[in-house]
Length: 130
Image (cartoon, rainbow, N blue to C red; front, side, top):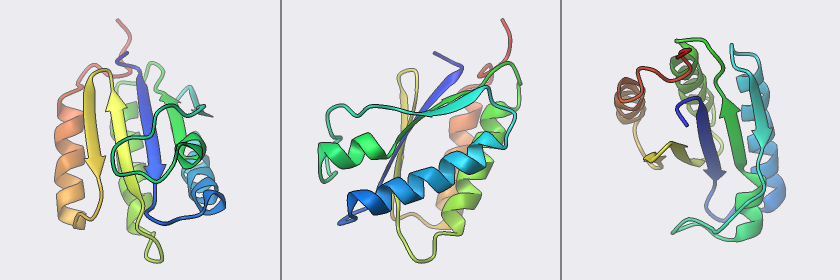
């Protein structure tokens, strides 16, 4: 769906508690935006390169964008800002909207900014009322 963004946060060699803490911080920031909801998701099969299913269950969020035409851009800006403040950690993100997937890990700030810009451009109607 064009009004739902799935986020999977992982961190190499991180304990489940650490992933839960990082995911909670990100969720709190996203809830301050013009979105309908940010919920935790039960995990499924672990994506390639992740440690374990239990960690993916902890790091999964579903952002329901609502009707704001700028909600996706706001969410991506908040995620980019949140990642930029994680100097003590190196989280990886797996973002999915419909069939479009963006994976971010070990990228420079400029690479993340450009990848996020392209992702938002590919979803111009995300959150917009139809």
